[in-house]
Length: 93
Image (cartoon, rainbow, N blue to C red; front, side):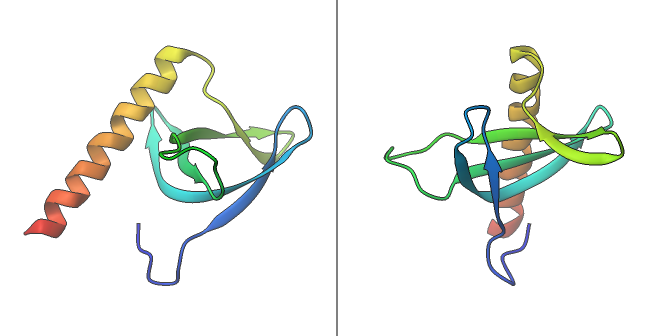
């Protein structure tokens, strides 16, 4: 992804009604489903974890959802890491 115009931020609401601001890191399509990876824009943690959400369509509207299983989450996480390291290798050339 290019930061040419600066980072992209979105605000999502969790199931408890709390608003969370996220910074978009990357996107990919895995098994025909689009996924987005984010870091929390603000975090008390020294190294916040990567947040992975998938884009689903419900009643003609695109929504963000968590992966359905740990297996799905781990597979998509691995793809994001492969993509990230491939981009780093390309930029080193």
